[in-house]
Image (cartoon, rainbow, N blue to C red; front, side, top):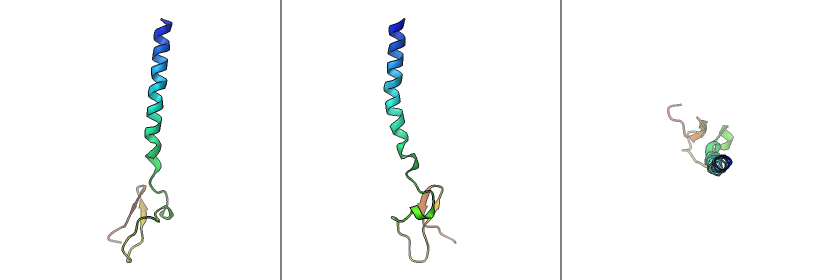
Length: 60
């Protein structure tokens, strides 16, 4: 019985090692407009942070 619990505990820790790193890229987007300095827009518009992505807004 103890061997089964130890095995399940070990498997849980092993799987947890791979689940945590998959969420590292979750905040790679922008938070403010100042975070969007790499991407370039046309000269008539300024790049904006919309829904955590750097976009060139159209129609403004």
